[in-house]
Image (cartoon, rainbow, N blue to C red; front, side, top):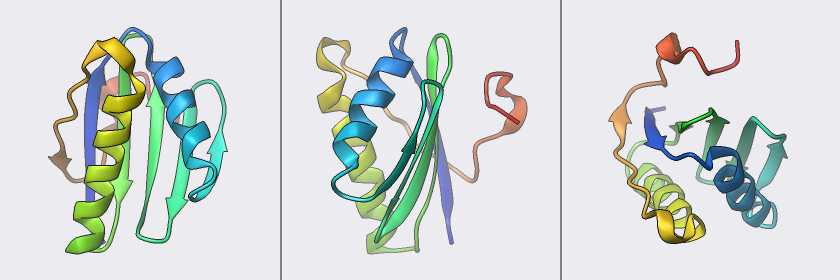
Length: 105
C-alpha cells in the first residue's frame, strides 16, 4: 500500500489537528490526544503529529482512487479548518522520516 507524507508549517499545529480530527470522528475511526491523532477511513488511514511549529502527516491508502481521495480529503479539510493561515500541503512519497525530532517514538 503506498505511503505518503507532508510537513506543514504552522504555529497552531495542535489546534488545527484537533479541529480536523474532531470533524473526522463521524466519518471514520479516530484516536486523538494533544500531540498526535489517527483516523482510519474505509479508503485509507492517516496519522498526524503536532509539533511546536509544524504538523507532520503520515498516510497510506491503496494505489489509485483511494490514494487520490485520501490526499484530497486530508489537504482540503486541513486547509478549510485552518482558517486564515492558508496552509499548504505538499505531499512527498514514502513514509514520514523519523529525522524530525518531533515525532514520537
